[in-house]
Length: 88
Image (cartoon, rainbow, N blue to C red; front, top):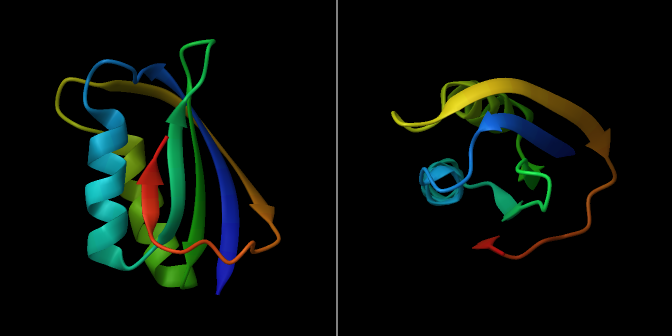
């Protein structure tokens, strides 16, 4: 089990990116949250099985069809014990 802090940049707001993230996180059993940032980026905290997080990160690099992901920064963090997955 691991936890990561993820910062996604590009055309990732107003394109369904947070809903895409939540849907896939729930399907993969990942806990945490996703939120828009004032600078146009999307921030997420993901907690779960290493393999499942890696799979979600692959999906986040692609994003929903109308998004354009330019960069993803992933930092490993300590788990906080999130319950469920929320869009903030």
